[in-house]
Image (cartoon, rainbow, N blue to C red; front, side, top):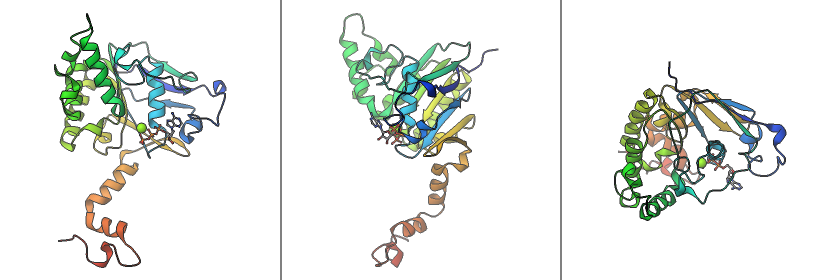
Length: 262
Ligand SMILES: Nc1ncnc2c1ncn2[C@@H]1O[C@H](COP(=O)(O)OP(=O)(O)OP(=O)(O)O)[C@@H](O)[C@H]1O
Ligand SMILES: [Mg+2]
């Protein structure tokens, strides 16, 4: 029987780390890392800004042979990448299944990736790459359009996909569309590791959520995530939340009844 599992676990060989004071080992979540078991379908990395999610995702991507800038494996669009010091001591426990497809998406370097793809398209014998991205330059599409094209046209299934904050490009409606496409790809034997701040995306049911904290990385239920709790509390009563947030002892905030309540 075919299974989605390509990666079982990510392990930090702590004995191979030489300098715990320097980045990336100085990041508390990385400093505490021993090993993480991955869900066969979807694993989410969540947590505060700066908690180390991208640091770990990039090192996993590099270990798998993806370019740091994002893209497919051997994607020459990402030729300006660097190697993270975390890559060397990181071990990946793989199954005997081999992915037939793969992609590393970094929202923050998508612009450079798009430029690299355009350059590739101009080179002799390398044209045609854009057909996987909706047939035209990613610069001629909106951020969200190009990402949705990538999801539908470039990703083929039976793949190992790493996404860093895919929601950056997407409206709430399109985040839901992304979940539908993600589910199709999961049904088609794909495995994902995704960092996200989106309470919509992390609701995907066949997933584990790892929260990155200063005390380490721990698995949490969806409803336990800060993203769910804050968004839920906010949506239940935006005015009360805003009053609480903007309350000033000197009465200048909304707490004095001068707010935007109807
Ligand atoms: N190249 C670097 N050199 C030194 N410190 C770095 C480097 N890259 C990231 N950091 C620091 O490491 C910490 C973790 O960064 P990282 O990008 O992994 O956070 P993150 O969890 O992905 O945050 P966000 O949610 O904002 O994307 C941060 O404090 C960041 O400033
Ligand atoms: Mg990040």
